[in-house]
Image (tube, rainbow, N blue to C red; front, side, top):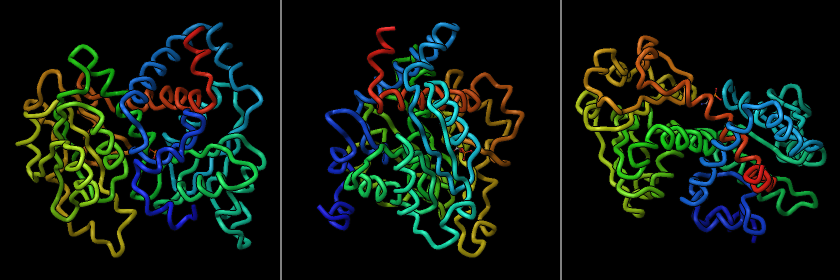
Amino acid sequence: MDWESFKRLRGSQKKAFFMRDGNIYHVIMAQQFDRGFLDEICNLATRIRQIAKSNEGTRFLLSLLQGRRAMLYFVQPSTRTFLSFMSACQILGMQCSEVRDTSTSSEVKGETPEDTVRTFSSYVDLIIMRYPEPGFAERIAFLLNNSGRPVPVINAGSGRDQHPTQALLDIYTLHRSFEDQGGIDGKKIALVGDLKRGRTVRSLAYLMKNYEGVKLYFVSPPELRMEDDLKEYLREHEVEFEESEDLAEVIPQVDAVYMTRIQDEYDLEGESKRIDYSRFHFKVEYLQLLKPNAIIMHPLPRRQELPTEIDQDRRAVYWRQVRNGMWVRVALIAKIFRVGGEIWHY
Ligand code: CP
């Protein structure tokens, strides 16, 4: 199949292409994850963090992928995703290389990004990439699958389109938060803010088809509503959702509030400045409206939409999300390199 034909396939049809011998290989989009995989990755992450508590366990984890190498190609800014992936690789004994700015690679001499990444594949066993262009990680996975030296590709953020590993850590955080409350099934979740250009909310919303009876509330300014493609996907998979501009009215109804900042790096001509985003800030007084067992999430980085005073509330879980991101990424890399079984048997 050529790239143009592949590109037109639906996410569910592409899933097989991202697998190898029944195991996950490339991690490109949230639609490729099913419920079995999500449950397994959450349980594996918890097992790994238990093992890592002892010195012997730490040494065991370090031995699993010793001699393997990873390339972190991050040409959009990142703090958490970059560092948590690097830490995850190191926990499993991998060595990491990085390119964080194309001005330091031969792209500055006119080499294409495709040739650049293909070059990485000559030296490493895993490529983790953040790139501004939607679909680029998918194109690289396609290119490498048809090359002489395929290596797995992980999408660590593709423009305003997807951030599938953030969605995994968000699911892991929801899974742990609601462990004693029936899990994620049946929960009501508000996604708040710039839903049009926020890749984390897009990837997380895709995953909701894997859970029974979840209802989503899309709370955003009219200019920044969730895109139609995502809403169409939810309708097809019978995931209930409603749209609102009234955050205070939604908060008492939900089990999780997922805040996001305005994504003004994608402005074409400063249009964010004309939007009153203050209506989508989590005000300190909203804590009174929130259910006692509900949680407040944020992928971070944050701005004024989430005041630091909220951090003291036991329902604020966004710093746990940061930590969970590292463990879930260890679990993901372990799955890609098929060492999950050894971890379970430890
Ligand atoms: N959540 C997230 O993707 O953070 P970074 O941009 O810092 O990686």
